[in-house]
Length: 287
Ligand SMILES: [Zn+2]
Image (cartoon, rainbow, N blue to C red; front, side, top):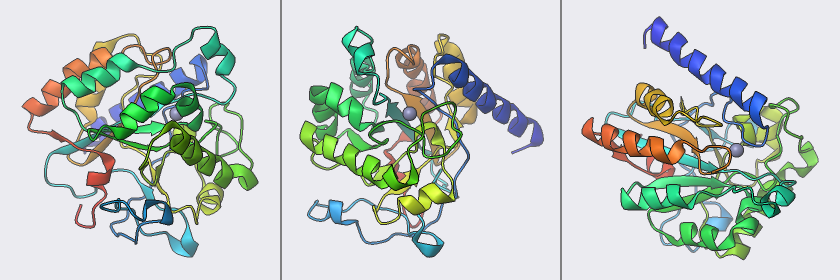
């Protein structure tokens, strides 16, 4: 990647962060890149009994939670679209007042276009929309992964989000898995996306033992609070490389242009020879 491209992409990512901070802290879509490692470990206890255990990365030094960002060295044109289903623990009253944190039309478009996708769902979202959560969780087109229960931050300074104390981090992640089970999601994936993408060594340590692989991204769609679907589509199309992970949102009130952007992104990437995969397909020893 040349310097100009890098700067251009970095600027776009920064702009998305600024927009998020200015808009509403509930939906943050920026963060530091992680370090992909190419190794697998036995499936965590939560996955025992599933037909084929989901691939995960080996823990880091001292058992630190591993972090996946993209499929390093991928040669085939695969790309994972990921959708964060954000809802913060204190947003119940806003939902009761009519604000829509779901986006059934977007899910319908992914189905119509047959786009395998990974949905990073908060436990609070699954509680608010149990029927949708179950339908997504039971549709083989999708996989559901963990985006925390509360959508509170796992670092001290993360776009103004309230902070989960280190002592409560593991419980917050496990509470989301419990909410998934209650909603009827039988096989959530052992993948975790930090709210806002914010993490540090302390957070990775706090989650060691949960068996999750943290999943970041290398392409920021900039869909948070965007109203220009064309701009979102261009940013994704400019950023995607073989093995990329794209972060988007399936939260209608805070990402209103995403569904329209998809209708450009999906055919254009297919035209370029890309195949859409779930995150679990990118996390491979030979990726
Ligand atoms: Zn989020």
